[in-house]
Image (cartoon, rainbow, N blue to C red; front, side, top):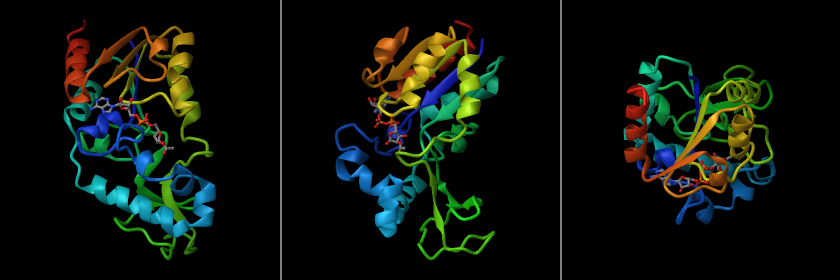
Length: 229
Ligand code: OAD
């Protein structure tokens, strides 16, 4: 039974990283048009670089939580195929020992818009940073902004088509295409499970919804899967 998992900001919430749309979330404090769009970057690149420097600094002190570790255990011990897709730009899945498909990029990576080279971002990026490959000062955080196409979509589409079980964890079902993955997986015959603090915007499309904090619900679900339930 192939399992395809999609995670969102809720999986990192208990590691101290803010979600986007909950009370006090990132998009209640910052205007996403200003800091998370190509147009915002063209208007005020320093502001955007500073925003991601702040997020990278916050994430640098964060540790993976029980949900990240449980998913890493599942990836290591599950006898069948498993794919872990994340919308998160933090590296907490990797810190817990997982391999994740980062469809919205990673704020620990920098990218050159001239030659498309990617490299590990310094903790504090600057507009004067030169690309290590072509030396142009056309660098940006390697994250996907609103209006840009997420990464790895062809690979993800294959996973969704071949999933037997699709599980969305800690995501509000607001941002497409990720919010549409449940419909894609369901149309291909997968059973769909949502694990979230509260029902997402697309909760009605899942066969089952488990509510509660990810550090409790995810380890309990992983134990059930590994026990063959
Ligand atoms: P959101 O902030 O939209 O949603 C977070 C979800 O996590 C909500 O449904 C919460 O109920 C849930 N949640 C909060 N705390 C939780 C906990 N302790 N345990 C379990 N669930 C919890 O974040 P995302 O859905 O990830 O994209 O947002 C999707 C995309 O929008 C992000 O990748 C980012 C953002 O703008 C870009 O920047 C392109």
